[in-house]
Amino acid sequence: MADHWFEPIADHMGAAYLRYTFTLGTAQEIDHVVSELGLEPGMRVLDVGCGPGRHAYELARRGISVHGIDISQTFVDVAEKEAPAGATFQRMDARAMPFEAEFDAVICLCQGAFGMMTVNGHDSDVLKGISRALRPGGGLAMSAFNAYFAVKYHEKATFDADAGVSHEKTEVKDQTGKSKEVDLWTGCYTPRELRLLLSGVDLEVKSISSVEPGAYGNAVPSMESPEFLVIAFATPIQRLGTR
Image 1 (cartoon, rainbow, N blue to C red):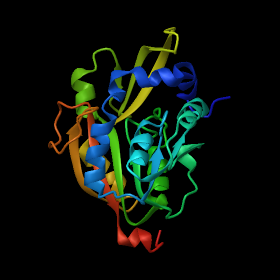
Image 2 (cartoon, rainbow, N blue to C red):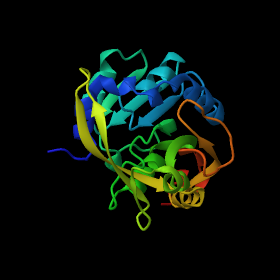
Image 3 (cartoon, rainbow, N blue to C red):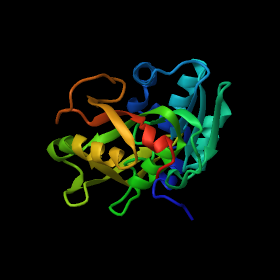
Image 4 (cartoon, rainbow, N blue to C red):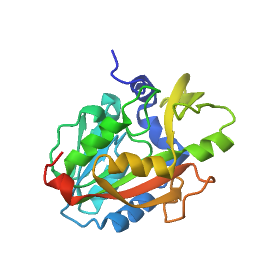
């Protein structure tokens, strides 16, 4: 039995996930993340919700050690097949990460674990695990769906205003092109909500910008972008183990 609703979807898509247009801007996304977090060769990064490993691959090619985790064993298997040196992968539930001050940075991009929850989801548990995983001064780059954009533009989805969750039915294709109708649930957030959530786990937000796949930058938050990108850093009090 699957531990998360997304697992059967990932099983169906497999490597075909990498054919979707939203995955084609990986290099630009990592260019921006490396700059914002000050990543350098030799550092160690945790990729939460790594999928088939596209961001981890790009970081590893730049000399940065990456450990990717994902709830989908299918995605982990795809990621491991052609993994470059420095990139490792493991099936793990992001709601129960065991890491303790092991990483210089964490990335959680393209709704990798955070935001991929239903009404009674566990985004706060994901954030607690991320916070624990960071070393003193460690940085986080995390994307989240824009609640304003969802309300304004998601004509084919149902938005639960009380829960902040968007639900839609769509079709995904496997390697052979076979389609399957699936349900998608996505937690959507405002910048204020993101700041409050991160401050609650001792992560200090440096910036929140309006972005879209393949076009990461420092645009001010607006209603016109599908995603927000959060850049945050572990605060000293959290690193002292006072929680």
